Structure formats: structure tokens, C-alpha cells
Amino acid sequence: MEKTVKKNMLSSVIPGISSLAKRGLGGWLVIIGAIIVAIIIVMTLFSPWITPYDPARIEVGPLMNPPCSSYLFGTDDVGHDMLSRVLAGGRIMIQVAVLSVVVCFIIGVPLGLFSSYAGGVIDRFVGIIMDSIYAFPGLILAIAIAAMLGRGVLNMAFSIAVVYIPSYFRVVRSQVLSIREMPYVEAAIAAGAKSRTVLLRHILPNVVPSIVVVATVNFADAILTAAGLTFVGLGVNINVPDWGWDLTNGRRLIVSGAWWVATFPGIMIILLALGFTFMGEGLSEILNPKLEQ
Amino acid sequence: MISRILLTIPMIFILLTMVFVIIRILPGDPVLLHFEKVENPEAIEAVRRNLGLDKPLWVQYFDYLSGLFIGDLGKSMQDYSSVGEQIFSAFPATLELAIFSMIIAVSIGIFLGVEASKSYNKPKDHAIRVFGIVTYAIPVFFLGIIFQMIFGVALHWLPVGGRIPNPTLAPRGLVLGDFRFSSGLYTVDSLLEGNVYKFVESCRHLFLPSLTLGLVLAGVFIRLTRSNMFETLRQDFVTAARARGLKETAVIYGYALRNAFLPVLTMIGLQFATLLGGAVLTETTFSWPGLGRYIVDRINFRDYTAIQGAIVVFGLFVSVVSLVVDLLYAYFDPRIRL
Image (cartoon, rainbow over all chains, first blue to last red; front, side, top):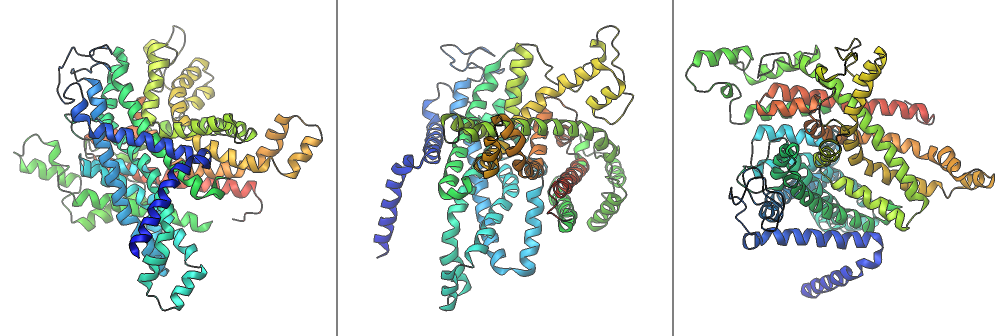
């Protein structure tokens, strides 16, 4: 029985993708966004086999060489091959983004569910803490936390997660509050279902679509925040190829006319963030058609 | 309304406590960072005493809080100077940048939003929407770098950093000394002085950073104006205005846009926090000597008191702005009672 349900769900999702295009701009945004993200992830995963040079090796060629046939994207001030670093440089950023979204998810969603369902003093207390973090300039808070935690992928992911947990909390909370009043939930409670069953089986599945939208937007924000943290000197080590680091490094070299060092990694960050933003934008338009009006 | 003002107190309090606790529970001693080798325990102890770090944690916390009430943000761990004074001198630069960026963001947002709503669901509308999304996805410092490359390095039209040129670069006969008026907003001060050269230079320095930050924020205002105008343009009073033979521009900017004003005002308040976050990166990109750059500079020295103080001031800044927005809202919409 369960198997057939699963199969039905799957087959309803796959044609859903092909019919996305019929959903107007929103559907197209999702498709384009997903393609961009998929290409970048595949590129990053396969980078060890496709980079022309070792991205961490210095002096593979002349220093600060403009783009030419042997170094398509040029080289930087220590002779890194920029093409290789562009191909491989997404790893850190994608790791940080995925980790921070996972942390947000693990903390924000249960907190929202629990707080709104418990109500009363607990809800108010958690709510005030979340609102305080939410109202504060996110990037500044992330910088302050990352500055204290020190460098590293995990630390970056954690400091970004702290900033975005309130977004999940707020969405889950407002959804639970409205769903809780629906007749079918009342019916479940009247039928004698435990609070836990009501929360996890009857309410949670209806909250999921909104969480997906938040998570997609969160990916884009996490990437931009990670780039920002790297820019102020809180990124990872120099030896690891990373778009954020190359962009930061390239900024110094602009004055000497080496535009290529900053430009290509910068474009990659935009593309990755853009992919997720397109997806989030499109999804929210499809899932909340009224809102987009 | 009152509750919103009251909320700002726990907000600053919670953030402060969070930062305070994180600093102290983490491994790593900020004092030790100032010594090359741990050879002189007495000197280290002296520094510790000087900064009050020898006291128990709760005493330190209480000291800090009671200092806050009289506006004392503590001593910098880097040079023992007053953090409050440093922040006070850096603040106007951030304020000036924030105001101008917001003006640019709102102007671009309203103009493009109106254009999009006029041709709803047509190619022009799609193009404007995509533009809004793209500006959102650009790291603000990368946009800044691009502008520096184009307008600074390649075209030499605009300066790429700082707030005012080096005094020695001023053409003969044009004074560029200290400011006589001291609001710290150079554009305002130079106007009060009546020094046109200084005013033009301040604006030239302000333009690229504000444009960078403003463009990144414009997307939100485009979307807001677009959806608001789309509804408003289909209402009876707009049709009536058109029927009276008014020009379309007059109908839109004189009648319909008024309805979008209050949502835009609310959005200014909401987006202010985002703007300040972006300001940190913009200030770093353009060597703009504001609060954001102060934080970034202090990170390298692990100057925790400074970071703590800046967090408090940023929190206050956001709260005051949202308070002002609420008051303005009540002023423009008499239905809202304070």
C-alpha cells in the first residue's frame, strides 16, 4: 500500500517538472535556476578531472598573465591558473551553504513547530529572541560571530545559520498558527490524536512547501554571506581554491589593471546565487499565487 | 506601537548577551594576542587588569551593562582608547552612506516598479523583474569592484575610495581644510560652509558607494511598487482621473503612486537592517571610514570590545530607524493611532 502511494507521488512530481514551463514566468524561473545550479554543482564535483592545472599550485605560468590561449582566464599574482580555480572554487561555498541550510533546518523548523504549538510564555520568549536576531543586520551579526569562532567551513556555516534560523522559525510559526485552526486538525484532535501526531503528521506536511521556499532563498543568501565573510577576511585558508577568496584577492590587483582575477570568480558567485534566487522566486510564485499578485 | 519600542530593549540586550557570552566561552585569549611570546606574566596580568578581564564573568557583564547606561562602551582591547569615541567619530560616515543609498534604492525601485506595472506581464515587465532578481544576487562588494574598474580605473571619472580627496590634491585657491561645521555628514557640512568645491568632491566620493548599495537594494522596492501599482492602476479613482483627461504621467505620479507610498515607507524601515549589512562590505570596498569598516578593521586585531560596542550601536541604529518609520507612518496615515 505504502509503495503505491510513493510511486504515485513520484510520478506526479516528474510530469510536474515538465509542466513547469506552462506556469508562466514562475515556472521558467524554477527551470532556469535549477539548470544553473545543477551545472555548477556538476562542474565543481568533476573539477579534479577537468581542470587544466592543479588549482592550488602556484606559478603554473607567468604571474598576472591576461587571459590567453594557454590560460583562458589568465593567472593571478602568484601564478594560479584562474580557469582551474574557477572550475574548482565552488566547493567551499557550496559546502558552507548546504551546511548552514541544514543547521537552520534542524534548529529552526522544530523550534517553530514546538514554540507555536506550545503557545503561552514559551512562545513569547522564543519569539522575542528570534525577532531580535531577525531585526538585526544579518551580515554584521554573522561577521561578529565568525570573527569570534575563527576561520573554517563549519564556523562559517554556523555563523550564517544563526542569522537565518529566525526566517525558518517565523515561517513555520505563522503557518502552524493558521493550519492549527483548520477543521481537519480539529477533527484529528477530536478523534483523540496525540499532540505529537497532530503536529508531525497533520500539520508539518502542510508547512513543508513554505519551508522549501525559505530554504531556496536561504541558499542564495548563505552563498552571498559566505562571500561577504571571505571578503572581510573570515574565509578559509589561502591554499584552498575558493571564488570568494579569489574575488577578494583580485580586488587588490584591479589597480594594476588585472581585471580578470576578480571578474571570473565574481561571475561564478553571481550565477550560483542567481540560480537559487530564480528557484526561490519561481517556487514562491507557483506555491503562493496570491502573494505574487 | 509602544510594544515595538519596548521590543528594541530586549533585542539589544539579547544580542549583547549573546556576543558577550560567545567571546568569553570561546577558547583563545584576546589578551595573549598582543604579546609575541608568553614571557612576561606580570605584563599580561597588568593588561588583563586594565581591561577588567581579571574579574569574574558576571561582574564583567554587570560592569559592561552599567557602563552602557551612561554611554560607556568600554576600552578597546587594541589600544585602550574609548570604543564609544571611535564609534561616534565613524558613525556619521555610515549614516551619510545609508541615507544616500536608500534614496537611490527607492528612486530606482519606484521608477522601475512603475514602468513594470504599466506593462504588466509583457517583456518589459519580465525584464525589469529579472533585473531586480539579478541585482539581489550580486555580492555587493563585487558590484562595487566592477564600478571601481569601470568608472575609476578605466574611465577616471570618479574616485574609487575615501570620503574626500587628499588636501594636497586640491587645486590652488580652493580650500579643503577641516570642516567648520561638524555634523560629520560631509555633504551637509560643506553646504553649510558654502564651499562648493568641497560639496562637489564629497558628492563625487559618495556617488559610487551609494549607487552600489542602492542598486543591490532596489530589487525589493521594484517588486513592492510593481505589485502595488498593478492593483492601484485598476481602481476607479485612477480611471476617473484618466477620464478627466489627465496625462498618464500625472495620473501615475500624482494620483496612483500616493497609494504605494505607505508600503514603501514600511519597506524602508524593514530593509534598513539589510542596508547596514551591505554597508559593511561597501565601506570596505570603497575605503569608506564608517562603522562597518571599523568592525572589519577590528576583527583582525580581535578587538572584542570594539565589535561588541559596534553591535550595540548598530542595534540602536536599526531600532531608532524603525521607530522613526512608525512615527512617520502614523503621521501620514491618520487611521493609525500611536
